[in-house]
Length: 339
Picture 1 (cartoon, one colour):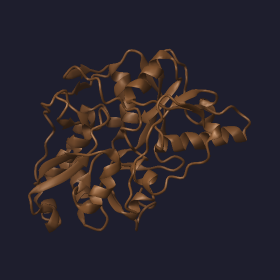
Picture 2 (cartoon, rainbow, N blue to C red):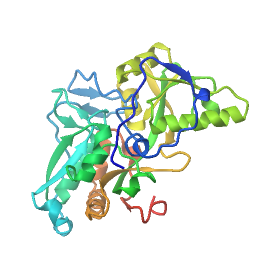
Picture 3 (tube, rainbow, N blue to C red):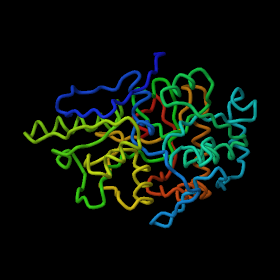
Picture 4 (tube, one colour):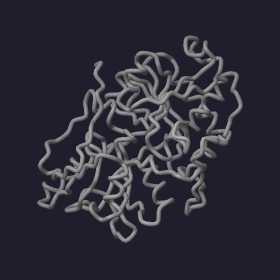
């Protein structure tokens, strides 16, 4: 499986979900589409200020000057880093820099920042390694991780059955998709019945789309009107359509919807669903299968959870709701039982 061509959006195109066939995310789509922040109308652009005060007391620092939470080296864990990975003294981490507050470019338009990078920094600190951040496109991280260009991926990657065939994981956040609407809306989205007849924007080829397709099938089975899916060519266009009333809902990674709710006067979160619906999944650091790094990352994350630095990072970005009580290593051998 060497071709990882990513999904594309269809500018301005509107179509009914009912007219679409069921989507099975295998190969490319399953590896590079399920948790794509950039393909989910996350709204990474438009941050003109270096700090933005949120309504819940969180202050989002979007400047290149990041006073990151740091952690002390754990000598025992550092000694477990595979030799081929630790010999250069660096932990090379890939991120897509496409979604506030997950991973995005600072106000200088070149420095990658966000909660994903802060967590990667904690792990590097625990292992006594320098953090080497490499920005890549979402569709390229699988191939480049397989080739060895990247040692770990911190970019809102969800664990799924297709990815565990090629990669090992160290979990570090809950994985939710959020529904957002205008402040005046009265929606309470918990399942298929709640989107009946509504216009919903979503990224093409993403896991969000897969969920909506399944919900529409359920609605059709009940004789109810399906939702209408709308695609836009950019995140900015997607949010403009929502705020202007051309769409009723947008579904995107939950952290991004929370960020907008906290920093805008016109939008709010009206529901969430696990990104692995109808089952559950988690966000995880992603490494090449069998290279021995994932268990070490798990240990570093659990050390950070224990000393409180992990919680401080999530609090810094307003994401304490997605905190895990412990990190687990997930591989093809224990997938399902470990989640």
